[in-house]
Amino acid sequence: MDPFQHLALHSPVFDAMFYGGYEEKEKKEIEIKDVDHEEFEELLHVLYPSFKPIKDDTVKFLLCIADRFEIKKITDDAEQFLMESDDFTVPQKFQIADQYRLYKLQNHCLAELNTARKVTAMKTEEEYKSLSDISKVALLEQIIRLMDEDD
Image (cartoon, rainbow, N blue to C red; front, top):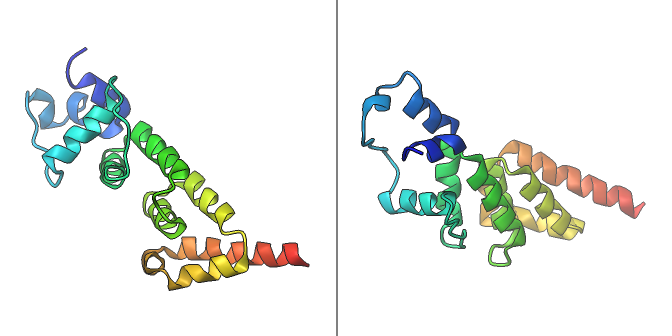
């Protein structure tokens, strides 16, 4: 397996870059702009067969790089990691879910917000300011669902 094949297998962006009609196809070394070398190296360690685990201090930048290069395996693994993690608050997880379109994580967070008080408390959190309108609607729908359950 050539050194690019494994990466291309997990990323349609890299597949197109290495095996499509791009000029990178002919190069032995490719500069990836706006990605920290050490962070990309960490992504490779998590992606390659050694399967280095995702950690609290790596999950955000791994999601950022995985999103940019459409690496579904890293995105799925990071989403699962966040659902199991106790080191991130629900507002932090909800904001990350919103940013990277992690719908299982968003539903997991909504399940944690199981009272109207918990949902409305989200508005006081710093993460609330950066939420998309779609995620704010999801919070509103959660309040409505909880109110319907009380009737």
